[in-house]
Length: 247
Length: 247
Image: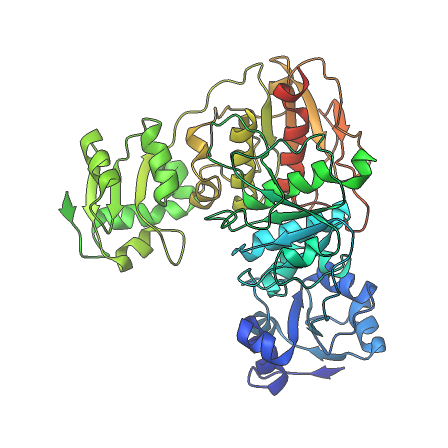
């Protein structure tokens, strides 16, 4: 444990730089923020490289025991490294895990989603309903610190897989199910030949097109509003198609 | 139509003040931001008092025809009155409608929710699934501009009702169904004696207690993550209990 009092300390600057996607990609590192997500990471066996905290507590001691460099900082330095204006609890620098290969298991596919909060909410639902998670290029970074925060620790409970496009998921035997705001089948009671890859498109434009989608589904609504929030729609489709509920 | 070029213009200052809940309560006014929500308000017959826009377009002309004072402003003034750093489209000052009395119809009850984004997402789902909306004291302001933005216009499609506590909803014959992260019944296939009042508690603490709750429900999950996002959980319960799906 070491006390850091200057915002120009190299560890502080290196951590703060990770709010930019460019620096996350260049270094392969990201930030996990808040007591819940940090505890979930430690629980999953992730060893933070650096662990910023304002208080010496059980999690800080545990991070230190695991081999993290624990840095005691004041509120103003914590705010420098955190994504939120009023950070709660520790901020940990971790190495971004290498994604797994896709497998024949229910999978959430983020395809063009732009909002880190929506992405995190969907990853949290994927964890709750037993889905792996993939993101195609052009989607918000799964390892954006805001996404990690919104997922409330689910990044460390789900299997994240690499997919360049929907054909990578068909190739392992998944049925590609696209979520559309209108015009698709009701997912309720839908019989699928194999576990679903549930695809959620961008908040503004939905799924760019139906190329690669085998079954289009739409959550039935009254029509009083134009559409559901993308994270809600994707969560509802995952829930409705969850293997546990139909087999 | 009038051009406003100074950020100290009284209309600009009065609008910007509405980001504070205190000023919304004192004036009975709020801000609707973005092309979608503003169009939904106009569609529902809401006449904005003031309509800030950077471009003279069909919606601006319509607002002017309805009697709104249309003020042409530049980007920097739009940012002053908008809740977002990069506002898209117009910002309208409207009078907050008086809530209706509760009625015997499916109703979403926000009871302690703190995040305006979650509240807006839930109101959007309420509109999609045919629920009225109530909020008990201690909940984020339903008319927070961020809540209105997240609801994507649903405020103008749903019936908002006034409720001081859950007994006000039982009094009109609703069955009070509380959403809990664990320990409740599976809402799937649940038979209710009357339309549900679906109660969603705070993100951090859930429902403070079960007082006033007749049936506790929990969306079944794998247990790999601690809980669902509150807006997702509430939306799933509304969806599962929606009258249209069971009668």
